[in-house]
Image 1 (cartoon, rainbow, N blue to C red):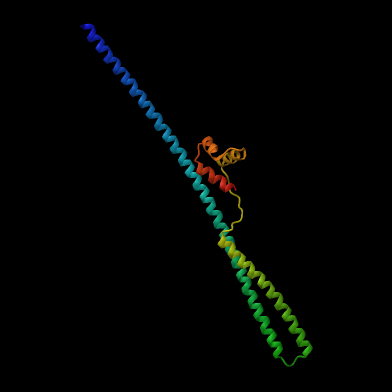
Image 2: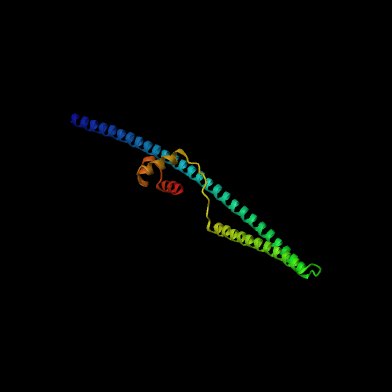
Length: 191
């Protein structure tokens, strides 16, 4: 009977040892899982920071383009206003010359022709300027942006070089441990 009790005690001790080993293994597994989560969290924070930098750069570029378009539009408007006043002055001069009775007829016609020629030239230039202003307005409405230099990080350069070497978006995302959306954003901006 003693041997029975000894074997039961031995089996109990063995089960306790197996349980401790199992608990230690489970704790190690949970620590590894936590480390993995922390690494993923750090990667996600880095991706978010890079996206914020990209957004800031895009905002700066769009602000620059809008300010340039507005400046050109204002310049065109002032030129149009100057052209209108010059045309009005030419019209007044023509009327003055017509009403003047003390000048000879041929001299008056020559002066009138000169002023009308000047008026035509100014009017043509005014039309060109008005067309230019309308084009600027339509470009502004359409959101047409000029190409600007965007500074690319080394991580973005890796994405571009892998893409140029024939890797797909998912393969690049797996290789560089990045999100597929971020890869698409980088490739879209590069286009």
